[in-house]
Length: 81
Image (cartoon, rainbow, N blue to C red; front, side):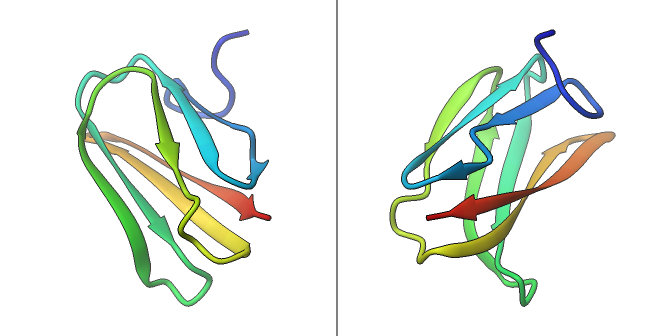
């Protein structure tokens, strides 16, 4: 199965030191990564289809990644180790 969760979006791996793979068929979306205090710590604009993003500069901990695709949105937990 290519997609997990809602809205045809998969994020792998959920625990990582450096990179996240965004697998989707969305053609125009943005990504926001939030810390546990709700502050945006990283943003990516004008993304399309499958992408790999770096989270190397973030400190270790729990984060939330929100994929905004117009009417399709999904928020997932990720862990930076």
